[in-house]
Length: 124
Image (cartoon, rainbow, N blue to C red; front, side):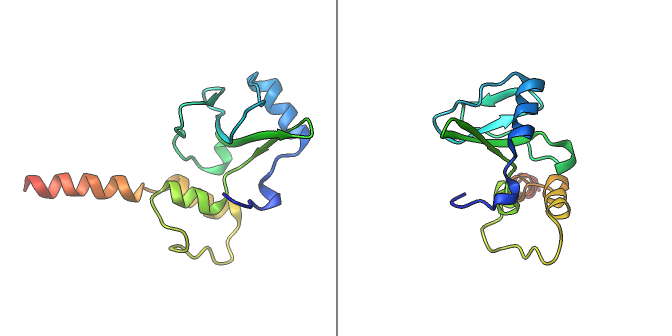
């Protein structure tokens, strides 16, 4: 994401808590996925499954700036991109971050669902 909203970035105390709990090195050279569930930073270019926000299992780790680690949650748009939607395809309305991201975490991946249905209909 080019310019993520400032409210999705974790503060220093939250980052320190992640370091303490998961023993991961946030010193990365490019933005990478922090897989909290498996307690590691993914260097293979893949993301874990999107989950509801209250599970708190996915974060994006950015290269440090001025000696400080930068970690953030996914934006609402990123949640829906990973679900197969194009930017601008979804109107978020007046709902909160929690409500919108919960929908993505509970939803079906649009691309995957299309592939499954295609396989079913090809067999009929």
